Image: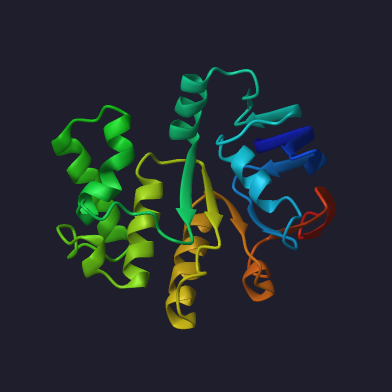
Length: 229
């Protein structure tokens, strides 16, 4: 079995004044390549901290995190950034598109950091825009798009580097129900195409569409539900 994500006794503590916040208290978890996970839990359960570690935006205080078989904890910052760029794509609730850039330029942004030349990057961006239904919006800016179109552009950007793992943080949180349904359909299609999806959500109806549901509470794994639990 090929693991996309492996966490071994991962802890993360934060000093806050005279106290220490125990955000993660010893997480042991393996996520198979090509699986679809929903991460749930109340506020303060550790969801954001876990997502930051999975996204190589933070490091465990203790324990080991392996991404595609590579331990990340001792990597220097530039090597960690390279791991993030190679293996991960991010979909955010608030889209995080750069307003001054066109759709094509936003989608191609990861390729700029990978050193692609402009013509090749634009071709890749155009292909991805077509894939998510934005083929006629390449030269529009985010302010000229609807919320659903902005999220589609963000998904295309997340796919630019052809990552194995997509991290989605409340991907439909700023969308109306009909548009959110369209975005969830797109995420499910990406899963069927072999992407590993890890989606943080507080909505049980969305979590039910994932194959596995990870419930966190007080920095611990409370339960795992689903087809392989």
